[in-house]
Image (cartoon, rainbow, N blue to C red; front, side, top):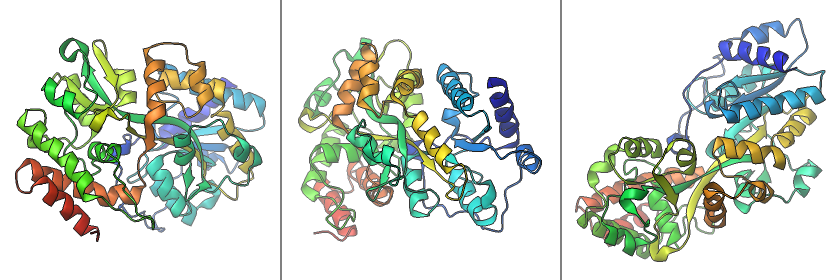
Length: 425
């Protein structure tokens, strides 16, 4: 059975899309879908479907490519083979696609649903921002009618939220990632836990000042008690709270901790590469990068927040059903549950370097620095705000942060200008 699965995967991979991965901080949901007149080019497998049984189609982004050769990829591939053994009458087709962009998941789902619904995928692995957009566009479909999904309580709150859009279940979470402080132990020693110790340490703390999402600023603002949505669900900020964050930035700039020249860094991945290249000894990064690529001498901890309040922003991925008319719908749901089962996720999340979505998964991890950090993070993690909130607030925070650091506005003026542009007080 493994040979059959590998053969199907290789055929589809060679005939499918090999776009670069879209990480959570690089997603731009303002991009329109392809025109319905643009028909996807059939792969060899799609041509062969005229002569043989229809496969169970699975789409994954490149970071979960089961043919990448990593330990996590092999665990995933073995799991798919286990499912094929349980269902010998089906053939699993795995296709690798970027989350966004031409030929990516949103693009292809939109186009395929419009012009060739008979070749829609059955199960797709979507990052949270794409899950939101796909749900609002009707490209994925609720799981609320599945009793076993409704009754499953073995989820962290953030994983429950990750899989829901407007309180409707649209997926099953399988991997989570959190913003953390990454540092070199030999240089930093004891990592800063709050703003005061960060200033006392006096070392540069690199974050992506040029990112239009402004996740680090959002995290500090929310850690200080700031709200990002009003009762109507519209974006908002509280000027005094945001002003306090900007006060910290001003003091940090004076102490050589922050620099407006960092506007050249537009993503957490760029920050991580700068850390790897030895440009800084402290940086804001995703915990998955620390666990899988940081190397010796690196350590990680909670973000330095006002008052040392534990807080981190978290994102993640979920399996979603994308073919409502498929005769494989029950099998697709079964496969999603099979790929989020606790014992399997325990092995896979450790190997892949992601936070688990289930308490039972983390409980089965062996005691180690990795499990100790994960245990702290899951207690303070909150899901990144909705896409519309981030897309509205993020650019405003990025712009005003830079203006504060360049002395163009005072912290209070900058915070009030954000509120004014949102229509607040």
